[in-house]
Length: 319
Image (cartoon, rainbow, N blue to C red; front, side, top):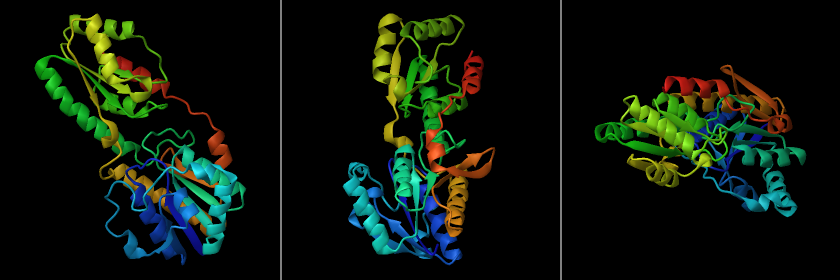
């Protein structure tokens, strides 16, 4: 292939720019023309496609967000929208598309693949909820952002001997809560994969207090509940003063960590390598620190497994 497109789609994630940079520069190194597609699938429908060069991606590896912008695109789910997108791809002469995003973005990539457009998916999402890869681009940065907040909030909670519930992102996947919680020494980690009761949480807090723990950090994934609600329920059932903090979109922003910059670069290079050989309809990722690729349909059919061993370790070391 000599002419390819790259886009970012869905929720932004730190490291997307690093992936764009790698795609553009490695593609040009191989003699390709690389085109940016603005606002993901919206850009495909609206023909917002422009050529990128080496200087287009200068000074972006350290920046959060995405220079290509991103948006949701319900129209692409309809056949008419798909046909508009494919018509623009063909009009521009693009021979392959690289999609940087999460599971929803990959569903769009799958549709393009099924309609004859060779497509490669790069995992860009802070949630770490794609089962075929050990880690996704943006996850490490999001965890470090949450960890920084946990560290600072703990200082105050220790000083005042209070309980703090810190709500992090993760509607269906509790990995940010799990990893940031362990790294931050949280006394409790509540995730959607592991059901809990208010009674068990209160009992745990009371036991901790009786054993000398006068302050406590609870890290809560948003899919497991709401921090404000849980704080009020605990306060009503116990004598403890409980504070709630919702980190929100701060977890999406900021410069990517070293881990995310390297992962994004490696995945971007592999994606271009595949298209340069005429190989499409794949997703790239990382397993055991090796960059891998597999069929996009197979990847999307895999069931995610929660890390039970790591969660059990978290329970033990929080005692």
